Image (tube, rainbow, N blue to C red):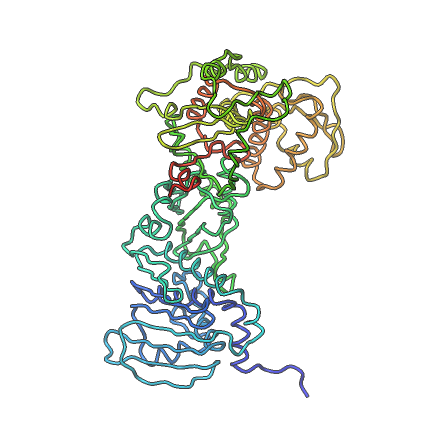
Length: 614
């Protein structure tokens, strides 16, 4: 008796469902993509119980006649291609002819469709892969697919589905990405009898994004645009202070198809390096058009991944487009800090017992502590004297830059342009914990991290110099040993390291002699700093140009961090104002070079909520 057997069609379809339809969101994606391919202008998706109980997709596309409808639920029946060579020129979202039969094999499936020239439409019912009914029916032009009790006959797959809200959110995310890819189509998503999403379908991407995310996001968008040979790129990204903790709101569209691409993701991450925290992700809608013959879409069952003929070209184009979009906005050199301030996370507030807090202490305090006065016995003259007492001149910027033998304009000479007095919109009030500057602007409260702000100022200033970073020779040269990969990287980039202050020369197999270090790097820390830079570089891409930029960024960020004002350093109001002016004048004031925010805003409305006034 033969051990190898041919599987029946029903079993084959159930196996295929595991690849093509792994959850309700996959089902919705396949059905909506079919509607798009059918030329629909309006698409409505309705679900119940996260799509497990019911999925209904309705469109106003071309529809099908009875013969086409009957064939469409058979495996590998498609109108998108006829031979394998057609895959090189495929422009539709679907092409394998697997979606409908595999969905029908694991659900109670109903297809209702009608073409404009037909008086009656066609209805087909399938239960678990078996056709139970086919007849004519009166219906609207277009197609409606009803999927009920998904995975009812595959309990193992049903058991591994997530909770209802999770599955519903997955569906929502898919529809959002598809709506962004086709702003000319009006999408409506109904989740449990509630409209969760509706887009205008007027062909304007900015209006679609506004309908999905709100005007708060669209007001902070930067436009992407690039045209390199036969590659065209468009889309939007956000300011560095508009972030989320997950990458889900980044949408990549290649030739009209929503895809996942590590190349595009990496390019965006690299473009925002030193502008955002490592744990944050900016919004991005990246739309790329390339010749169809330069990509392969037939590499994943769900068609969510593709291969580019030239990955490096895609990376470079996206990287430079994003970087230029962010840089162009700041090319004027002056910024309104009120616009770049990040919104705070929801803070925890403790309600103080004022009766206890303002009582005269029963035991004498140490002489180093300021004596607390009764509530109605404040000495105004003493307070004013304390605020206005003379302090040291704000010279840390000059001192730290002079130590690097660089002579930029003195910080006091930098002032806002007369046309826009944005820096003085923020008025410093004082300092908290000798670490944070508290300022006000209009009816809002701002808190500035003095170290992060000064670090950003110095980093952008140092980065503007094209000459070699000043270095100091080591009295005793250090011989450092690396593994073969690290040694290869160092040897290829010796001129880059030398320009940044790390002069090295080979001294043996996988060994280098460290001769000079940046003048701001302590002798004892030089080796650890260099090894940390090498480790960080290996986490990036393997292109020489990108590695050179990464080396430069890491060295300058560390130098700026060492030279910046430290937490615990007391500043007077004049020094605080100068720091705010400098921050407003630097190209990228949102974050420090390591991605931490420099300034946080509490709006007047936020304050009202905190004090329960609203």
